Image (cartoon, rainbow over the protein chains, first blue to last red):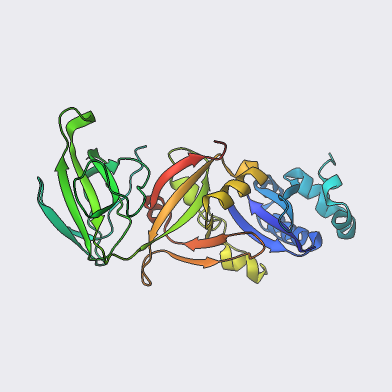
Length: 86
Length: 218
């Protein structure tokens, strides 16, 4: 299945990137938070797109901070569950 | 709707029943006192208000903000018609028409917006929001950091807005003159996102090309 992870800035309404894995997307989230501070997470939403199926939200805001603090492999294996953390 | 747009072509037009001609050219010349009459009329469909064999592209009431015409060929004619007194407002009306040889000159894109009418804020890139890319940023991020996410069709934008509800509750249709050296450029980006394009241009220029806006949930 041709899945991907999309990272959006929902405040600006612009996509930031599309990634093959959650690990890659979370690495960019980490980069952005390092650059602009943790409060920047409130502007971010990470979604997962699988083929023609509707995209689902993997995490947003503080959920993303929790996700980058977890081992990336864990987040990638079970990204949807990660949205329930916190 | 009161969306302030503008006419990016030079004009020669006379009031009354006289028709004028639109010249293509780099200079923007605003037509004061117009606002969109309705959503852009379908091309090659006669307007009921004009007894012309030409094809209207867009019509506007006189009295409010400038109006964007959706084509830029020199085959376009402008016509002012005085509406009859029983019609609302009885203002002068401007109708843009094309002849048989007119070419489509505008490209449609759809942008998710937060407000109706959309504002300058709805057309800001990440960079324009005072977020400069930092050293070490991935190339893919840098390529679109100063651009704007749009889709090729309204349906694609609607789907995106439903998938990511916090993006906004409205979809703004933009008609951008297809000019190679124009102020707006675009590129198909993020191929796994159906119909996603990135636009680059000044936020106010982009806002000026909005011709209609609809709610995500109709």
